[in-house]
Length: 185
Image (tube, rainbow, N blue to C red; front, side):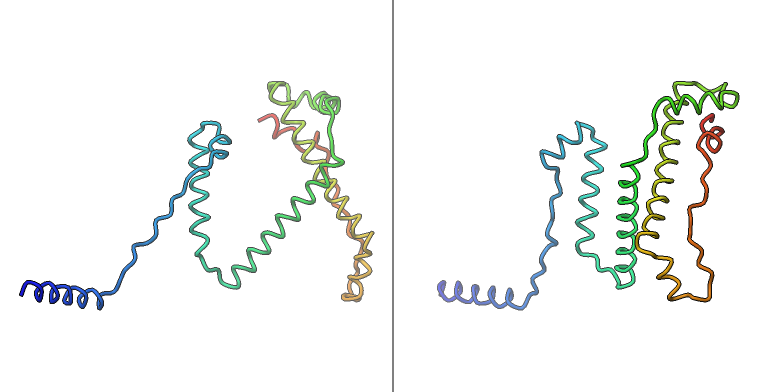
């Protein structure tokens, strides 16, 4: 009798378990820092936290489904970032500013900058002149591509009725004229 009860109990147990849906608990993914990331964070918990949050967002992104329009927008953004990165690299190859130029600009604008701290003004002035030079170099480079690939001639094929004058860079004011008030602040 005991044997029958055990068999019956096992049978009922099996039957009750077979019909139940098995729900798997969501798999818990552990996000952690690598030894290199800990080293790179230089024992700064804020940097480490940023790395962990970035990893968590990237993990969530793995399962996100973008629409076709969103995918197209992301590709366009990526392309624009790559273009800007490339143009900046090309501009940095040729754009430079030496300390004498910075001092000359400072001397030319001493009346506008007389109340400003020179130790704060000179590095900012140099950065702004360098930024402006890089922007000018990017424009020059793009204009050189217009010439190299005869882009204006190509454009005229598609738009013959319009006057396609060769596009040239808008003249940029020298940094000493353009930025002295901003530096003073």
